[in-house]
Length: 251
Ligand code: BTN
Image 1: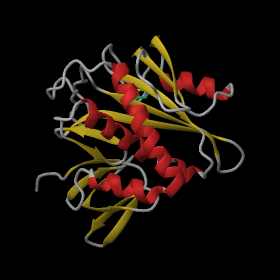
Image 2 (image 1 turned 90 degrees about the vertical axis):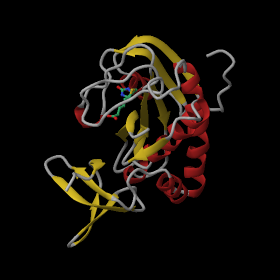
Image 3 (image 1 turned 180 degrees about the horizontal axis):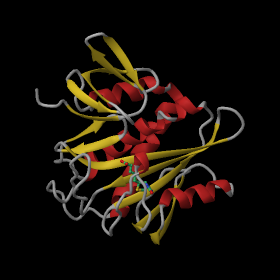
Image 4 (image 1 turned 180 degrees about the vertical axis):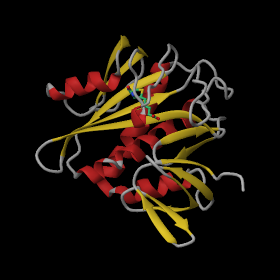
């Protein structure tokens, strides 16, 4: 990536075609790679999304994985998904300032209400409850987006910002992610939570949350101190650690 200075300790390894950037970075991390290594690829042949879904990965979009070695418990490591979402939000604000984005719980980015970016965190543990490393996998639809997805998808090109190169987006993401990562390390989750909430889709509104086996309706009240969603229901508030949020079903 010529001319794109990255803040230390971030450095890039770029591939043309790879199975999954997350898998490649996991291999490098097991071999002892240090924090800040970023793997990007032009295409993935086995890109993975959350909930075991495939992440279709044609030429033109960003596929990146960033290695973090946090010194914290697993529950806190999950907060890195929000750190990454703020990084993507800042990067899109920089390279495509006219595109309106918001954060969709837990870790997606929407552009004009459609999914433009997804984040897949993968953790490997050492003894007990402490992650050895966290792989922060980020996909951003720059040139194209898939059809027939559970949540409607878009790309920056479709939203009026064509011609953004994956390398440009990668550099912008890393710069913004580096700032938010330092904030998280120095000040904890509170400022991350606060910044994420100011960008959140559906806060205070009726939403539907799809869990593994169940679908819940309620009001999106807040995030708790671990990043779980607090859903207001007629019989009280419910804490949801993992799921997917959708606008409320029409009454
Ligand atoms: C999701 O929203 O389901 C998460 C999608 C994460 C996709 C990225 S693309 C780069 C990295 N490598 C992968 O195989 N997945 C992540």
